[in-house]
Image (cartoon, rainbow, N blue to C red; front, side, top):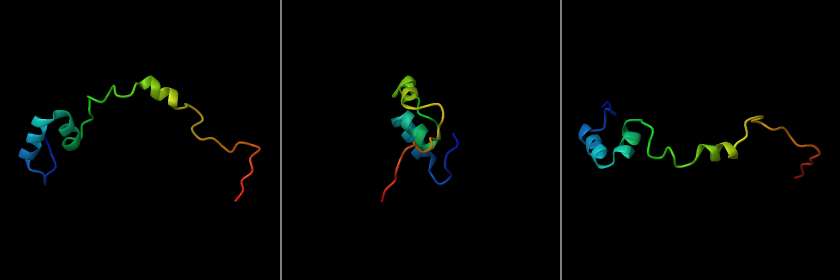
Length: 65
C-alpha cells in the first residue's frame, strides 16, 4: 500500500486493522463503500433539478435596500 511518506507504515497498518473502511478513506484515498447506501440516489435526484442549473431573476421583482 502506498501511503503518505511522512506517515509511518505501522500507523497505517494499525488503522487498517482497527477500522478498514475509515483507514482506507483517510490514508489510502479510497471512497468508503459502507456509506454508499446512506442516502438513496432517488432521494438525491428528487432534491435536485436537471436544467436549468442557473436561474435568472424572476420578474416582476423589486430589490430594496
